[in-house]
Length: 462
Length: 141
Image (cartoon, rainbow over all chains, first blue to last red; front, side, top):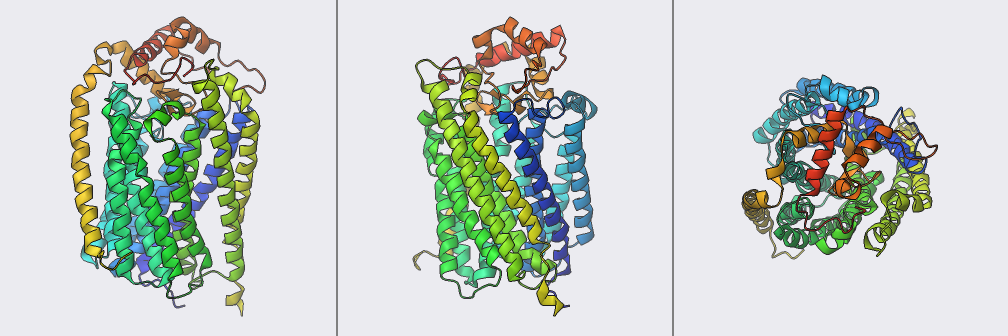
């Protein structure tokens, strides 16, 4: 069999991608449960209270995206460097460590009361738990650091010893940034204001900082592969995109410092710089669409091109447009911590990070499975149908959440006779039902996506 | 993109821009740390407030509620709950959970003792006294 991947160690990407998809299914299952708990308040109570389901939903998202990023790096870096990883076996070992640690953490959330879990896992030695997205027990957090270090060892040595392409260097920079910023997860002072201030160094400087480097480099790699356009041109775009991302995004952290006790000048700095944060996403959309328009070849994997362009467009809408909508301090004063934030979060994560991971999976998996450059047209058709089902559902979910948010802001924040939180929530029931219906459509789309991997490849049976 | 805009220009903007704004950000952080004591109400952080924060964390309160607008959007904002409801109400509320009213959102009972409840109330009271640039817009949070 003539494999299309040139380096044996690229194969370690495969289990990472499979795990990513499996955890993605879990994430969406819990998303659907959460959506239902919004309308049937006691659904699954007391077995799975809302806070537990939400923790599972968000933590699974983070973990499966990390699996996706690592899979992407293990696939891309050897090829770009023109050499194998120093230790593919170590990469496989880390895969199992990360998967087992992740699974144990999720099981812990589901079956042990959170305060007991904290007690059992040494949270009293170094309290880090109970903060949004950083709920993981100390041992899991340490596990993440160990996996990240081992991962960077494999990837870093390959990049340093091999051909240093822009894709490789930017990807490595993003991954190192990811690991370094995570260290702030271990800083949790008694002072809530300082806690929150540095908590954003993990959360914001990940998703609106270093993750954009990872996103940009994966997108650039996919564009090089599928359009046949000269690297020089693609590299220039990539530099421009990540330049804009960091120039706007670093000081843009200020849009999280408006109302948590930080000094007033953050209202100005945060507003100005985060108003510019759509720029990198605008360039990304221009980049993807221009490259595909000027392509030198028609790559047989149409699904990959669809995911990649979709990612750029949806990231621009979700992160760029929906982010801008509530980022200016005078607007955010009213929208902060409402369903508007939820609307933005859902579309931004889906567009920027879910879709780019699905794009690289779509590109690499047929090759890793020995199916040639692309799956059969029949399999691609199923995959592309799932693309539209999931993407359209996410757009509709975002629109419903935005509607809920606007109504919430109006009744609870702007009105001269503000209503209480729960009274407002009652008035949003119908909108939440609409959201839940499209959550289920998203789930159907995801099932179809998984199904696309099992469409028999008739071309090989001839 | 125009031909005259070269790859090395783009790279220089990336490296120069990133370094400049990282340094700028660190400078701002330094300044924020310096003036923070005037705003973050730290003089009132005592053992009880610290214990209250710990109880807040190990019961994953942020999984349903927001605190200064951050967290989940399933249950009310608690940054100003002390001002809205008062300490006794908060304690009575937590003891009465869950309501088990059919179809309504349910809050678990966290089985806190009197000492822990007091600490939690102290933490929420302290949080309500942080200078948040006048947020939230009204008492409903």
